[in-house]
Length: 465
Image (tube, rainbow, N blue to C red):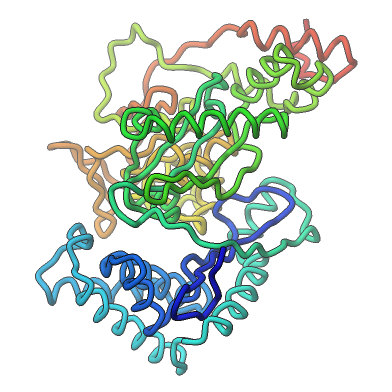
C-alpha cells in the first residue's frame, strides 16, 4: 500500500481484529485506527487536508485503545468526554460539531484519565501499540461475554482465535464516505434481497454499537447507485463461492468501495429453511446439505402463536422488526435482573437504550429484547436473531429513564415489572398481554420435512408427515 507503520510521511494505520474459526459477532475485541500519535496525526491531517477527520480518527483510537487494551473503565473515559462537552456548553448530540482544536484538547483529557487509572502514559510508539493490541485481542477470547456466547452456542473452548491485522480505510472522511453491514439475503425471512444498513461519515463501530440509527441499505442505491450496483455484484460472487448467505462489512472511502470481511450470516430458523430450499433450487447445495443446515429439533418454534389481526389491539409504539416472533414478559432494565428473574421462571423483556456485547447473558435470559437505538444490523438484532429471540430495535418514541427504571411513550408510563408484548415481525410494542392465534405449517417447511423423511433425518414427532 506504499505506507509504513510509524511513518510521518505516508503513515499506515491498521485495524487489529480477531479471526476465530466460528463467527462470534461482537464478542471479541477490535481496535481501529492504530498507529496514531501526536506527530503522526499532524501528518495525516496534512496528507488529507482535513484536520477534523484526522483528529476525529485520533480521538476514536485513543478512546478505543484505552478501553480495550489498557482496560480503563469505559465510564471513566465517558465521564471525561461528558465533562469536556459540558465545559463547552455542548450536549452529547453536538459531538460532531467539535473543532479539531476541541478534539485535540479532549484527547489530552483522555490521556490524563489513562495516566490516572493505570499509572502509565498512553503509548506513543505505533509498534508498542500494535504489540499490546495483538495481546488484547488474544486475551479477549477468554472475556466473560465470549465465554457466555460459546456456552450458548456450544462452541468448543479450545478452538481459540487468530489475530488479523488489516490496513485501515476510512468511512469518516466526509459525506462521500461511509460504512455499512449487509446480508446477501434477509436474515429474518430468507428472501433473496440485499438486506442491511449504512451510515454516512462513520466507522464500523458506529453501526454495530447501535448508538446511531443507520440508514436502510436500499437508500444506498439512491445516494450511491454505482457503489450499490458494485456491492450487489460482490454479494452474489461471495454467496456463490461460499454457498451460503453472507454477512458483509464494507467501507466507502471517498466514493470507493472496500470489503472488510465476510462470514456466514446469523439467521432465524424461518430464514434458514427458506435459504436452504432456495439454494437447492439455484443449484448451490443439495437436498441433503439443505436438511443438514436446519436444526430440525427446533422446527416447532415456527408454530408459536402470532398476534390475532382481528383483536383490534393498538400498539403503544413501534420500532424496527429486527428478529421475528411474539414475546410477552415483565419489563426489566438490567442484565442482572434479566438473569435473576428468568432463573425464577419469570418471562422478562430486556429494555435498553442499546445492547452491548457484554449484555449477551441478559439477552439469552430474556424472552425478548426492546431497544430505543440501533438498527437491523446492531448487536441486539444480530444476537437476538441467532438465539431465536423476538427483538424490536430503534423504537425512538420509547424514552427510557434507567435511574427510575421506567420508560415513557408520550403520556404513558411503563415501570419495571409491568407486562408488555413485543412483535418482532412487525416492530409493534403493546401494553400487557395480547390475543394470539396459531399459524399453519408453511409450504417451505412441508418440503423440508419431505426431504428429511427421504434421507432418514429425525424430526419432531408432532411434525412428521
